[in-house]
Length: 211
Image 1 (cartoon, rainbow, N blue to C red):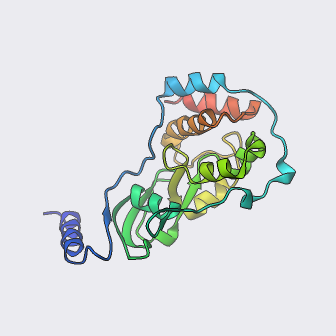
Image 2 (cartoon, one colour):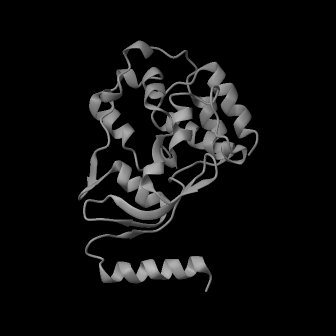
């Protein structure tokens, strides 16, 4: 057995012994429903190109999150369980151990406090691309969407570096991930019928060209 295998086996045994207190989640590391590059390009070309608007009226509180998803678990905790490896949570659903691979920069973390949950298309970007006209209920659905590639577990300071920037202004430091990043970004904009500005579309087209 390798050291990693031994550690994994030990976690499994402990989980069996005190399973009433926590669960062990399988690793995924990639959110669902990311289209192929060709599909993403087709969807990108179908999006309305328009300048961003209403930026001055953006308020993060207009996108309620994190909401309770199941039992004691909120959306952030669900993503940590979904995308981590060997994740152990307590009765309050807080992750007490595990590891998380951040695809934006290729780093791996073993403390949940080092991991942010990034909105692929940031809330402010969504607002300026059309979400300003949505109901609060729809914005809540968007901010907590586990069904598509909107929420990613990533290194906290990398997420902070990204902030509210679109791909014309910021791209993942790990260049090999930029193809997947563009595919996921386009899918979110397409699914929610958000607009793209011309610089954003140009950057996404170039990123998809690396796939």
